[in-house]
Length: 138
Image 1 (tube, rainbow, N blue to C red):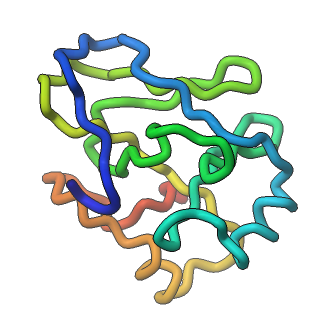
Image 2: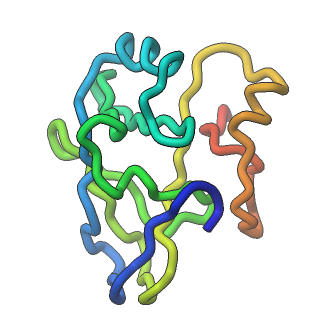
Image 3: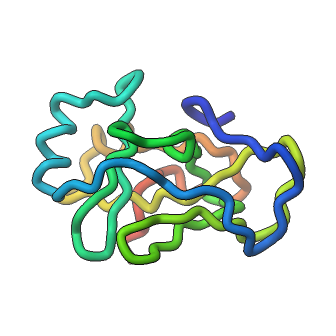
């Protein structure tokens, strides 16, 4: 487990399989900004997932165990949007007992200061770890 609780496969999952829906309250980006300061998430975590139209799903409000999926720079899953819903799909075969990972590719506005980079440092241990959970700006 990299950070937080983690989610683990209870059985073998084949590449392409839909694993779980990321559930929670759908809110505006402005509401998400307000919630960051007074986060109701457990252990100081926030659980926001972006939707294509700029809204977000707040997994801390009415969410499920999908909110505990950890980040890795070498993920075995990806998030796919279908309408107002996000589903987690395996990108390769996952063995029973293995941890499920996605690449967060966090999009944070503003300058990437040293403090911000420390806050979103990656500790996944992947051979080609980017060192950050933030999206690449190339």
